[in-house]
Image 1 (tube, rainbow, N blue to C red):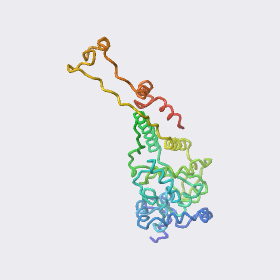
Image 2 (cartoon, one colour):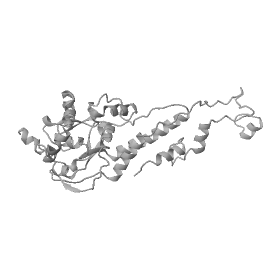
Image 3 (cartoon, rainbow, N blue to C red):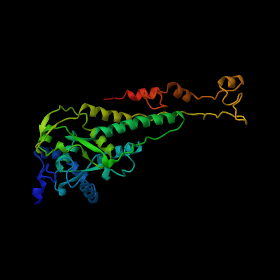
Image 4 (cartoon, rainbow, N blue to C red):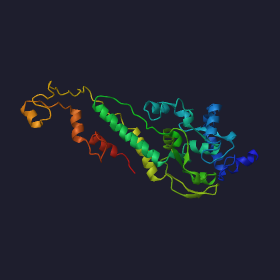
Length: 328
């Protein structure tokens, strides 16, 4: 099969794939986003080849090829270096991503899909499936409560990231511009799809186009499949909730917290003023004293929610605060 025949027609799985030529709508806007070509060129050839081979030498979105035309597109742009460092310092993006050219921040795309992904008003975006979004949301809520409790003890704890197998995370593409779907070889029957990159980079990239007004429309693609444009409201809300959790201020750290004192015990095993195990009444009658309780401990004990309302030890105030964030 010739290269031109391989670039258009059916893939190995029988799904039509895109030709090498860019659709007219992409050609019409390419001059306005020429910097995208620059982004791709700054990735080393070895890294670009690795990313292309990782994606099976096909465009991740449309399945287009051949491999020679594919580009290593960024999730977080190179022009956002300052934000990239900020995300790493706040432990939103893991420290293992040493640079914006790290393979876990790159995805193999054909020129058409690359331009549509990086234009100021994105034509499409990719978001982890609901199970992964829920896992990140739940982790952030629990992690904030853990940090808040540590702050009550006078300890500052950093944010942590959930333990996620990035190679098993699936992503759902969402098409925002109907004309982009009509002029591309998009096969929704193959979605959601695996992408072995860092999920938080895709989520941070998606927020650029997530809140564009987009009326759902049923369109027919060049792959002879139908899809509905837009992002479902429940997905928008989940991403908004996660971004709100990422944006919470660090919990306050209490000062001059006194560690709880241990109860003194007699040599015979009894507490002051009484014999251990004889009950509270005898201990009181013997003149024993109760263990002092700090202010933060009293707050935790008196306001600790029941098991069905939140994790044990979380203050009701913080728990209610977290529950006020947008929820589907």
